[in-house]
Image: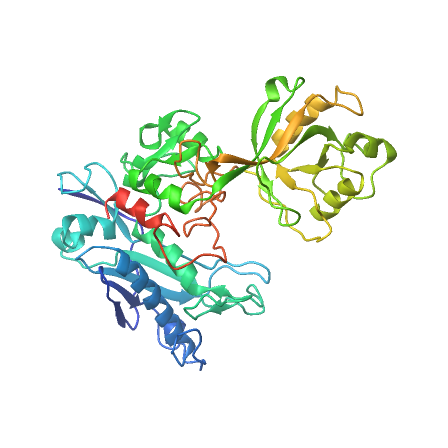
Length: 480
């Protein structure tokens, strides 16, 4: 009747102390730390942001219970969901760190039908239990294993572990330069509850030849194929084709209009000389200068060329020939050597009305342009190395004052940020693949920002449903 696959095998339990969180679902935090460490760290702490614990260990446990309460209030299972949790030293340097992770302890597939369940699909343990209305481990093996396993970094903020950016243990979102543990927990618990595939994004291989239930809602708009029905090779291709995989669940799609904002950032290329390169291009917006808007800025695209190799770094004031080329135009420059805001300001000073920064490393989708300069008044974006090269090829045959290739830099006002043209939420499929992130998150183009994007954004709320978020509707698609 059931098939099981262990995600984690034997786990040693030390000094267990259960702390229950009650809501529409009962999510219990199981303390897996030994005495004196992790949740049992006796270091004194001052209550903060509603967290009234008086030791570091108690505040950590309180934050876990708080996040579990939020999720529990939104779910509808009668079966206890146990989270085996530890704080322990994880990979760290002075400038980077693994914050933590959570996922299903095991997964189940059904050989016979249960209400709301699909046979021949892997389900995360907590959702499988909800659908059966009983603990599957207990039914099959007489065991009571945890449904979710969670490990978080106890060294965060120390001199050798992302120094200066320790955990904020309050509940109110006032983390400042620290990292909001509750927000990270909400995200990681989401993975453990069902927002992830167990199919390999590296090889495309299914676990024991069985798709994940999550896979049923993934569709590749470029290959025009459903993820669960692809070959392994087709899944590998889909996993590294940015912004072509969408979520097809009806509940999440219904939540898009009230959650994601209209206005999808893009570069539209046209003109009498555009030819085969005409079309819409993905862009990464700048953190400085004006916000992209509709109808946007429209002008010919002209390259900046200030090196013998044809590279236009624009790190110094533009030459007379380049000033003549970009005046009143959208300037195409290259990433490298100096900051993005420096390049854009130099192009602006030369008369450009917009800037495209072509990446110098392969991959996509293009991320934003970081930096700050309050004197920048023109829009600017990053485009991929591939798209930059396509544009350069078309532009090099033109005169120094006109290209015949026109760009409109702004937003597609008929499309929502984070969705495709049919209003389906986009799934994160960057190139190169990001292990642990690819396919198992919403895309970074979403606006507003969503809980299950690969990064925790500062504007998140603790809501998991529209109009703030799409995670709960996706869970309903899965069977919650």
